[in-house]
Length: 382
Image (cartoon, rainbow, N blue to C red; front, side, top):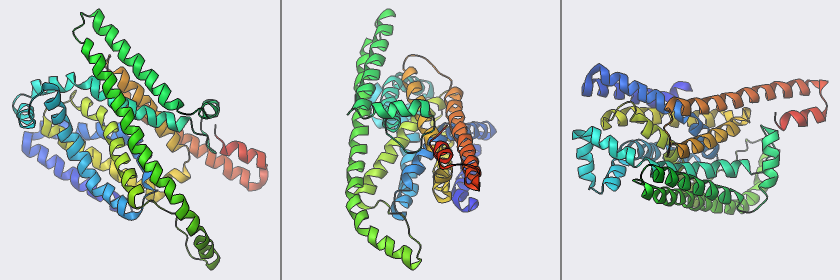
C-alpha cells in the first residue's frame, strides 16, 4: 500500500536528484534535497485539507487531481508562476523574464521579492477565508471547544467571515502605507497593490468556492434518490459506498483544490529564494516536494485517516489560519520559513495527539465504565 501510493514520488525524487547532479554537481544535489524537505514541511497541512475535499470526489476526478493537477502544481506554480510574477512586475515579456531567470538570477530574485506584497496579500486573503469559514461553522465534533463554541455562535451572522477578512485587509494595507510614508513614501503605491491583490484573493475564493458549493448542493437531490437504493443494498448485505462528487460539482471542486494548492505554495516559492535563485534547482526541489504532498493526500484518503483522527482537519485549518496571518505579516516584516513550517507541524501534531486521546477515551467509555454523557463529552472535543 505504501509503495503503491508513494511509488511515483520515490521515482520522481530519484530522477530529480540525478538531474540536479548532472545540472550543477553535488552542491545542486544538496540544494534540491533541502528544497524538497522545505516544501513537504510547509505543505503537510495542505495535504490534510486536500484529503478532506478529495474524498468527496469520484475515482475519475481523483485521478485528474493526481495527473493534470500535479502538472499544474509543479510546472504552473513552481516554474511558470515565478516567471509570470517577474514579467508582470517588471513589465517585460515572458521570454525576457525567462532570460533574466537563467542569465541574471540576482535581478530575477530582486523582481520576485518586489512582487511579494501582492503575492502575500492574494494568498493570505484566500487562506484566511478558508480558516474563517471553517471556524465559524457549527460542528458536531469540536477540538478546542473554548474557542470553537463561541465562534460557531458568532458564525450565524451572515457574511461575518467576509467582513472580518476585509477589515484585516484594510488594516494591513493601511499599515503598509503608513510604514512606507514614514520611510519617504517610496512604496506608498504598494498599499494600493496590497489592497487590490487582497480583494482579488477574496473574490477568487468566493467565486470558486461558491460554484463548487452550488453544484455540491445540487447533488443533495441525487443523494436523496439514491437513499432508497442504499437502504436496499444494506438489507441485501452489499457494500454501500458513499456518494461522491462528479460532473460540474467535481470540476469546480478540482478548481478549488488547485487554487488552494497555489495559495499554499506561495510561501514555499518565496522561501525557496532564501536558499537559491536558480530557477531550475527551485523547480526540481519544489516539484519533488509537491509530488509527496499529492501522494500523502491520496494516502490519507485511502487509509481513512481523517475519519479515524477527527481533529486532524481542525489542526490543518488552524495551520491555514496561522499561515494566512504570517503571509500578511511578511508584507511588512521578514519571517523565517522555518517558523512558518514549524507552526503548521506543531498544530497538526497537537491535533493528531488530541485525536489519539479521544479515541482511547471513547474506547474506554465503550468498555462499559463510561456513561452516555461521558461519551458525548469526549466526542465533542478537548
